[in-house]
Length: 168
Image 1 (spheres, rainbow, N blue to C red):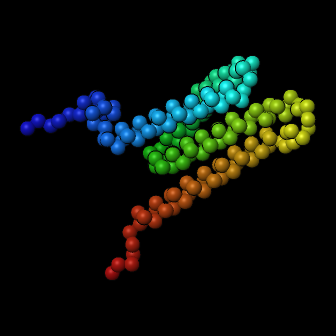
Image 2: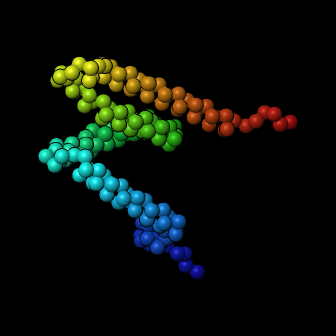
Image 3: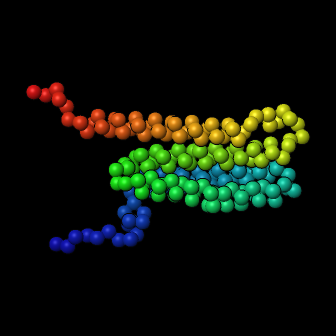
């Protein structure tokens, strides 16, 4: 008897993929195509054609920011957490990575407001807050919540691991 070795096609999602996975994948692809179509329709309906260049520049900038800033920051935090030793559980790593991603996304939303405020808006009521300070406070809150979630996870994990002393 010979053992069946999975082929590269089955491990990459080919013949070994279940029917349910293929159906879900097809639904998600169809949904994605429909949303891209909706986005294109809304774009042509709401944005003047002379503004397409600025929009294209913004989209290209978001890709650059993702690849040049977000991805390296998440990778660096992941590497840093992994280098602290083998005692770091994967769930703790996932919690920290999730927090970094959430903070980075909020930063991407707030940084344009910080830049616009620094340039001086034409109307002072448009950007009334100190967005840099608020972003710093947000990062502190994210760090505190991340530490609390990690502590809660580790405490619950220790409770599950400890043997019960109630048995006689």
